[in-house]
Picture (cartoon, rainbow, N blue to C red):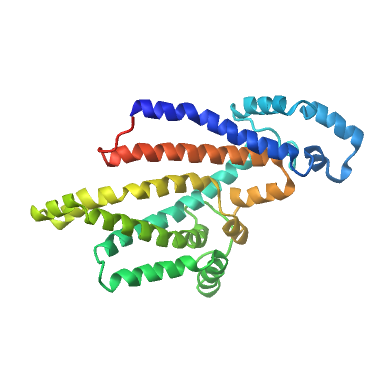
Length: 309
């Protein structure tokens, strides 16, 4: 097991360097000169050449990339082209924290509702409860978030005045309720369907019938044998969902006026703020690679039969 983990860890830097190189090349040869973006309407060819020389943009691309990787490995992603004098790290760090808090609460809503319901209706297969719950979950999942948020605001803000209409006050503030519900409810259907399918697959195994024939209590069979084995496919979803916490949600953050990383990422793309785009890409790639590794490790913890060579 440890040999497998070390092998995966050794490959992580190579994967990240590949991702960084592709993003770096797209930023350098894509539309929009970084110096022109930096200077805006005050562009002057003479001054632009001097800035390129100071920033090292006149050097070969591989030399530029090497220097960038050296700095990025130390947590220095450079200076924003849009916000002069501000480091990229100081810009994106608070926004990532905001998006992570919002997405985490939304994920808790999806898990706390979806997993128990999926496990429950799997035991009710063949009854009217199974298709009813699945149909309702798919219905709520199919509603676009552009409709969900205004509807929740209409009920919670305009009609009942239970929560503020917009803004951000942290994870324990009432303003997180509507955006978290809007993001969490669509995920309930996915959790229900995956958990239901995994549970039905486990219920059909021989060792479950053996446990039942031994006279074990329903609660014992369900928790010790069924749930523990059916949760394995969910681990992958949860791992990548946790990694996705850093990505934010552009639509929700824009409508609700939340200063998260999703909205800031799109703004950086339109503003061609390449250092910010590079930093967000690298952080996201790192999160997904680590999440994939953690999911593989979790498999062997949940099911001791799973071993890696």
